Length: 104
Image 1 (cartoon, helix red, strand yellow):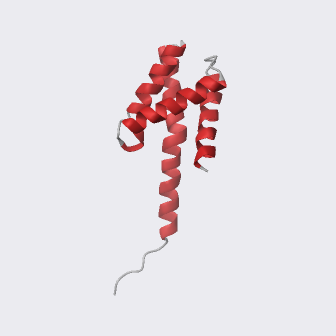
Image 2 (cartoon, one colour):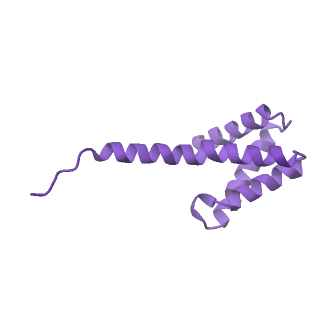
Image 3 (cartoon, helix red, strand yellow):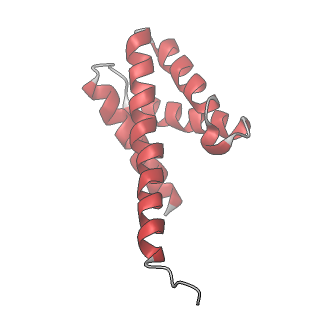
């Protein structure tokens, strides 16, 4: 399931790059996303914050994207993959708790 989820995120990154008219191929998008994920994991910060973004922007700039496009792509993919999942998790956790019993 994790592999399928990561593949879907890489595909979403590719679609985002196409939408931004970056001209990146699917293999590059998948490798850039996976490489940035590894860089984020090596940062030892929660969700790879900072490390993943720096690696992703660097890889996109190396590919020849304009700096504004590279930053926009990085911010958008992180908003849609990381923070959307966090929001769903918070909503699921808060709804699963239900009403709390009051102590007597």
